[in-house]
Image (cartoon, rainbow, N blue to C red; front, top):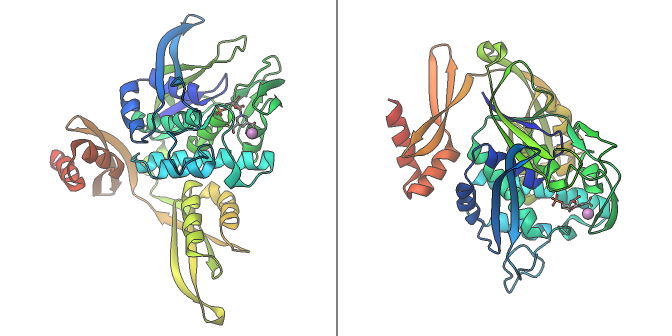
Length: 405
Ligand SMILES: O=C([S-])c1cc(C(=O)S)c[n+]([C@@H]2O[C@H](COP(=O)(O)O)[C@@H](O)[C@H]2O)c1
Ligand code: NI
């Protein structure tokens, strides 16, 4: 199992995150090529490998072109509100980025947007990304999602995240650290943050926390099961009086005994019947629940009381995710209550391995159950290869399968 471990002893920001992943080996040129799919101009990416406190790492920056308004996009006749959340979501949605990159980036913007909406008490639709201009935020957030995609890891873990203390000056004026958006973003689920009273500045930014919340599935220190393969540093810009960087490590974990032998586990089946929500609302809820970590979400037509046609919304959740997903179901649907039951299931043992097809990495999902073996090329990787090679998806999938036989 290939894991990205984030050692956030000096917090996390968008720049630090991208810097650390570039330092781990993601190519700046690959990031630039992928970012072009967003169809936004007016910026340059800068990545310099340099030493701080005699430790080499990468200083990453998004430099806006001189004279470019910090609206976020090249302004078109219908676009005068480049900083609003809905415009950013629309920009990402209509881009040619990879589907998973789009999905993660939008989820992060929505999370920051929700916090901003709460802090400033403005409707979500009116939230704008005010501090450094939308273009920086877009490139930082989308760029981070691209870098992660290019790094090819199976999971992401993180240490306790350091933040500073005191006050900083930002667009709204003086703000306490953790900054209000960060404090608000911490309210949803337990995320270990440790303030350092001796550091009088911000270490954890809204973008940094948004990335952590979207991708990290486990918090804690390095442990004896983790074999460190590679280390990278992404430098922070603020003067903290200490070594200011995000340390990122690629670690491999031997498959645990449980993973190797277990073919049975427990899942929660969460259900609710809906007869008063629009099709659009149900579709949105479905995508939010998947983003929130549901194993699966599906909708079945049912005939309800008073002869009303309705739907049964079913969510499959991992053992520890029940409460979070029940809350999300109540938040995104018109349901007043959720039924749940725990079910045993038999699952095939699964692991990933990577092969190369015409120079492009394709992950293979290998599933085993007794003498049944199934190898499936990952759809997302085949899609990227098909796009780059300008061939049909089936050509890549068949080519990969042919290599295996
Ligand atoms: O909306 C945003 S991005 C935002 C909200 C707040 C509040 O706490 S409210 C603070 N800031 C500050 O802006 C800079 C840049 O943040 P990024 O996340 O875009 O890197 C940083 O100092 C934030 O604390 C931004
Ligand atoms: Ni704000």
